[in-house]
Length: 260
Image 1 (cartoon, rainbow, N blue to C red):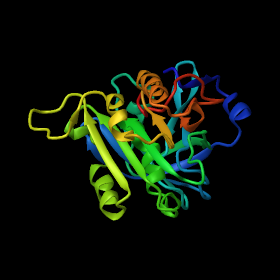
Image 2: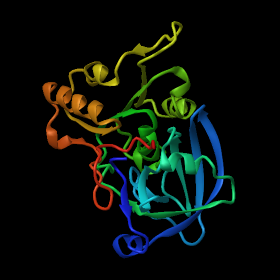
Image 3: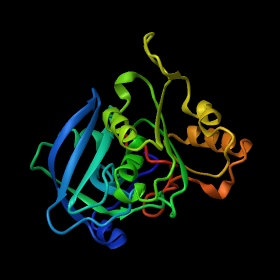
């Protein structure tokens, strides 16, 4: 896993610092191999900004491993939610999928730079798969809508059954006329009436003639690379395009796909 970091036993706490205990409250299936988990800290509250991630601590042959997962819920209290795809042979996802309500995990405190920039203006979120999690956190946060910004979620998935949180996003669109939910499928059924192909190929259509967008990207590195190039060609300034290059102690991949 390129965005995990292994610590010899005993060294984790020295390098990471605080480690928190969290208890699984419940989970639900979003797709055959994708679950939405709801956790609660055993003690205290979890302070974070929408878009940040926690590190889940797991065991490996070489020691303790910290794996980042984007928080899928808005801030508030001691609870937080994760969206996780089960990957065959994936150390963390297989361990998480064995959990039942009441079981506990260790996490490191929230961190990450993929956060809303204020004031919120015209915003485009681009995500693929489970990497929609940080944008769900942002969209469900009350401060997102205080200034009634124009917001679009361009969400790429493989098939209809992987349009995670579809009902929630459609409900948001009905409550906020300035919010657009634009799903794109790369492997749709013949009956799919919506957009097809790669999500980055629909950026120009969504942006229109406007260039004063703040654009947030989360997903697979190749999607992010292509999306950045298309945005540059369309006149979006580089300093207004944001993604998550995970920082210490999680080094490596761009974006947090919440897989593995």
